[in-house]
Amino acid sequence: MADRDGAQPRVTALARKLGARIAASGPLPVDAYMAACLADEAFGYYRSATAIGAAGDFTTAPEIAQVFGELIGLWLADQWQAQGAPQRFNLVELGPGRGVLMQDALRAAGQALPAFAAAARLHLVDISVPMREEQRRRLAAHAPTWHAELADVPNDAPMFAVANEFFDALPVRQHVRRGSAWHERRVGLHEGRLGFVEGEAVPGDFARAEAPEGAVVETCPAGEAIAQELGARIAELGGAALAIDYGTAVSGWGDTLQALRQHKPVDVFEAPGECDLTAHVDFPALMAAARKGGAASYGIVGQGAFLTRLGLPVRLGRLLRSAAPRQARELAKASQRLLDPREMGTLFKVVCIVPAGSAPPPGFVSELEI
Ligand code: SAH
Image (cartoon, rainbow, N blue to C red):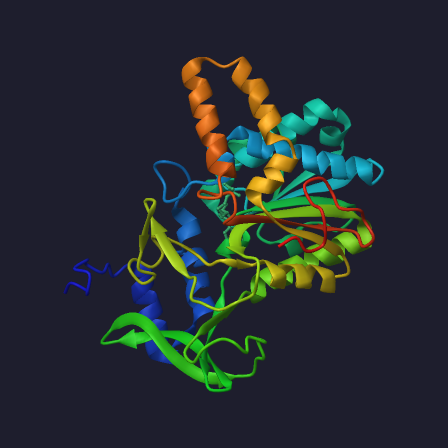
């Protein structure tokens, strides 16, 4: 049977598994659905797909231009130096994908400050087996240790961390406004097919007085827990964390859950477990969680402004002078994609977490820029 758009819905193995689970114990909260689609032990998207790149489902900044990872490496090394260049520290990446960002970061930071690369113990947090393989290929020389979650990374030294397009993959809950109450949005069955259903009223004051009747408000308990943990570790032993993602600078409302397949948006129920699912990151909520952990946070700054302040145009100018014409055109185009407000420049945003009382790190001006 074709759906409204004429597309053929695929009953994937995960769709059958979720259908049976819903039939047995009722509709699932949206975060449970998203978690299953991405991380189900047997059928989750990140368990099998090599999602990133031209042949995959989406592309990310480090895959577009190496200068992205290089500038992040220099930022981390600068913060390490600003905190007294500790002789031992944990260098952590959350969701490293194919390992390209960290490879570029360590090369650039290692050239500028060899002692930084020498003192780093590399910890990679990722649930994806194929991605871990790619990471091993690129980062073996740095002897990484892998973990399924941040909580497993040793908390025995200062931590310098980066997360690019990681928080958008963490499951969100959705709540629908009905009068003065908020109802949990759930995934149930309509004539045997997965779809949204409205669940019970749940406690929750989202301070979104302006949200109209029927509006959807999202929260990301998993993301907030990780931001709080980063804040607590940085407050306790020092370090810094940088998070780059697409999302909102003001906590608002709206259903931002989206599925991507081969670089095209598709319905979130189209082929569960075979598409990437993401939601916009609520940056103010992440920063509040980091501060709850005891650290300070800076941002929110647009990716374009951040990379410009770190000197991307200067670095690019230097590269262009020694590049062949075709390579120069490609370099200029790639940088443009990262910086331009019509591309990734403002949709993508950057925040950092540093010890309370720290001055704004490079790229940041104040505690609330947007
Ligand atoms: N940072 C990379 C990859 C972004 S894609 C880049 O910029 O190219 C998201 C990454 O997070 C993937 O490597 C995926 O395997 C990982 N990931 C997704 N959900 C995760 C989770 N719950 N815990 C740990 N890693 C996760």
